[in-house]
Image (cartoon, rainbow, N blue to C red; front, side, top):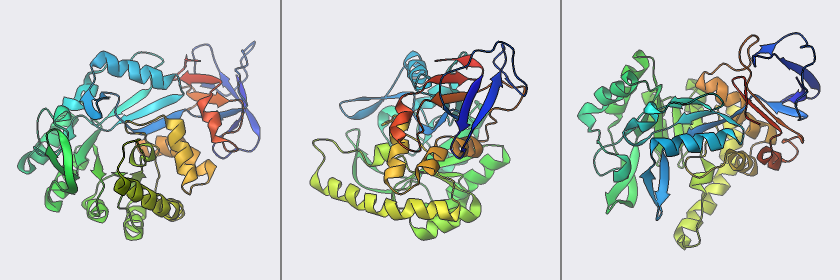
Length: 352
């Protein structure tokens, strides 16, 4: 059993009972072990992740399936219980076999981008505009629950982006693809770092990934349509020792804007998701959300309850396998507590 304050919004301890099969039950279980931790969340959610990607000399490269499984196991050990994979080379994540104690996984299949408009190593087959809808539906047929469209990106020269990002597909093509994906029961995540957020929202995408050029009018549209925003702050605010001064200035300017945009998004009711891209960990992403304008409880919600809700994943229903992560100290008082989980239970399997 767990006796703990339920986060992100609880204020007093409750008793959660888990039976020998790992299922949440309403009544006390005789002789149940009391699991450590005084605060509990229904598992952490990384809503923008790439377990099948690594890096070599600063360039994204594919990982093998065994390496991707190892990465997911590592995340489970930190309390990440649900992962939305937002694209993998050739849709390799769709082939992963995950056993007990691993995070639940929602996959987006392969990246959808035209030739020369994404990292070549991650794009074994390009997606020309005239085939965008066909290829998106093909990913759903392979088992994807999401489709990941690269809506803008720079031209790629010698394997790396060169110059400013620009549109990769027309608005009409994206809208037609989104309509077809929705009709087939799937959802669409859109990578964008330019000022086309409003156009993508009007086209019906379900989530905006990154959204570096987000503005108030786009947030208002997103609030009306229920479009989620995954800011991926670990990635977009990342600075290296050799980062040019001009880039540092752009990042600093964006940080100032985030301190206005994130609280506005929360007030408007835009679902905000925590996602690490390839720059995690999720505890750091939650801390960055709080540093840039969200109340700690709302930053924590982005990586817990809001994540489960937006991704449509049921969690902790009576009679079903329990998923929970406990902490000895209240993360709302110090988000560093997220780095030190006391107990991790994923779908009834004790990980820690």
